Image 1: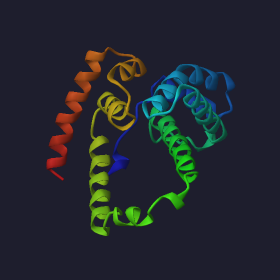
Image 2 (image 1 turned 135 degrees about the vertical axis):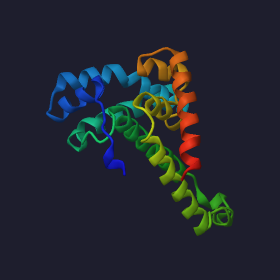
Image 3 (image 1 turned 90 degrees about the vertical axis):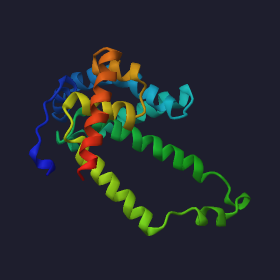
Image 4 (image 1 turned 90 degrees about the horizontal axis):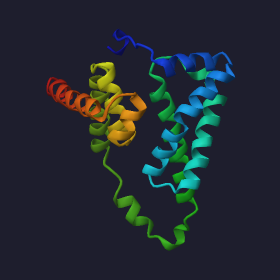
Length: 186
């Protein structure tokens, strides 16, 4: 079902297409436009300023290294935040891995693992949510992804999307309303 939608490319997605062709100027424009956004995302997820800046640099380094992987199946922001989420997750995993497990009771971790039924239910819910988000309008989906999936504030999302905060609230309201209707039918 997901093949039946078309993506209208925004300026950033068009620039990313140029980056896939090794265009350094387009990459610089994306870097300058989104560096602060990625730093804010990292800080919002608990990173101190200095670490957030380092992680943001890592995100853009990976973006350049893997530029040929961009296929245009999603908007550039979705692609960028995918890298940001992965970099953040790897950093948190590395930090967690440095904690000495000798001080911990491993049985506490094992008893908190979800059951196979719970895992299957979560996968079904996630699948339904993904299908429903693709049925939103582009503006609704971008606002929804920015605020709910990427944990940006409404003000940051408005700056990122180039619209007013009132407009973002409006898109979020319509997205939630439409999502509720779509999820009831699934």
